[in-house]
Length: 290
Ligand code: 5RP
Image (cartoon, rainbow, N blue to C red; front, top):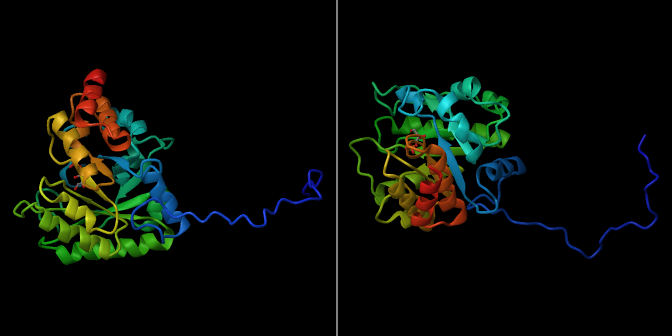
């Protein structure tokens, strides 16, 4: 039975003090339910409003990618430094310690390998399994302009329906075919379509001209992919430019795990994203730590 010894006669009802009814820190996310917001707040740091996602899901279509041959050896030491780990459920279950803190963004689409037409994906994870794995979000590839454009968009909308049912956000990853032009016009089209169709945040590539127009007309947060390996200072400069032009973080893979000093590089990227370091300050940090 509840112990009532500590109960006082005079209660503190604070009549006249309105209950706090705060908004939510993340772009476009104010009207979601509690669980959805809580998961987003595990991905995006509420202090900076930004995220450093470590992307290691490349094996889902290209097998043992350089730097990911042994995720247990190369990636596990990086895990505590990331806000979020983006990976497949196979890699998660077999190689990532369940006591890890970062939020898990689960690769939820797949099908074709690099040997086939990549846009021909299906949904590859059941929402129940995502919940079993305590996923903070689901990631799906969207091929706007690709051969199987409609199918990939249908994958997105089905995952948004499933995710909304259980409070799990969906990250739409804009995938660009080799033959397509990577410019602001294309990324405005692709990111806006993803957001309009319900994606809770969108991953895209940084472009040197007009990236601020991509972020400004997308009603949900945008994170940038790192893309192919660049010299460290160039990758840090790209991250700085993207953040300055409205990105809410990075979802970086090869520029971290293919760096000569992945721990140092991840710390330097964090300095840019969360501490507003300039590229040269972050590069100095990288050099100090490498
Ligand atoms: C695969 C992905 C990857 O996660 C992403 O492209 C990897 O990041 P990076 O380009 O920085 O290696 O979405 O399609």
